[in-house]
Each structure stands twice: as C-alpha cells, then as structure tokens.
Image (cartoon, rainbow, N blue to C red; front, side, top):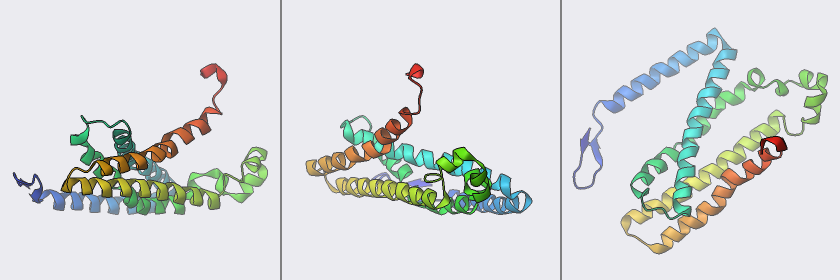
Length: 198
C-alpha cells in the first residue's frame, strides 16, 4: 500500500485487497461445505459469527454517538475509524439471511408443535414467533442504518470545513440514537433482574 503524504489517503491497495478477497472466497466455500456436512452446526456457527461482527459494528456506532454527545476532542483522530466500523452495518443485513433460513435449527420456539406442548412458550408466543422476530430485526437494522448513515454524511461534510451547526446536528442525531441504543434495552432487561442483584 502507498500513502499519499498530502491527502493521507491510500492510493494503491497493492496485494492486500486481492489476498483478503481470496481468503474471504475460501472461507465462503468452506462455509457452504460446512452446511452440507452438518447444517445445524453451520447455522449455530454462522449466528455466532454474525453476532460477533454486528456487535463490533454497533460498538463503532455507540462510540461515535458518545463522542458527539460529550463533545470529546481527544477522540477526533479516532472518530473516522469508528465511523468506518459502523459503516458495515448495511452489509451485515446480507449476512443475516442465512440466520433467517436457519430459524428452525436455531430457535425451538419457531416450531409450532413445540410451542403447543410448552405452556411457558405459549405465554411468550406473541413475542417469540418467526414473523415478529423478522419484524424486530428489520426495525433494529433500519434504526441502526439511519443513525450510522446520518452521522457519516454530516461527518463527511465537516471535512470540507468546520461548521458549528454540523457539530450541533451530530449531537441532535446522537441524543435520541443513544436513548434507543442503550437506555431502552437497559430498562427492558433491568425489570428481569432480581432486586438482590442491584
């Protein structure tokens, strides 16, 4: 790779891009082979990898929003890295497709006969069902995509020249984003924690 000393952009990817594509291609072929060898294990492994990479992308989104909310200056040099990390969220939607095809291997509540035989699952059926699961996932990714896209677009505008109104706009985007991202799930799960653990 070659670095332009004036713009600090990589002008030549060299062999690294080709090597990364080759490794990715081999991994994809091995994943397909794994599906035919043991489909149940394939879906479990795929889900683990999917959650791992999605959580890294969400970490980039959370860091970026937190950076804007607290008006941090020290993290300006790291912000573009976190923005590029969160930019993979739309790509993760593609990797979600195998998870949707493997619902029956991954989640026992996706089987109608199991739900009918389990009183506890019947009580949760309104929430734990394939249709609502897909709707929730679509909603989550839509919110994450909108937040990451808006923040990234405003950040790129700042590269042209510093504008205080753009800084304010990023804070306005980040505030409700952080509420949706952290506070609502925390409130939801805190109700299930026994008081003794508080």
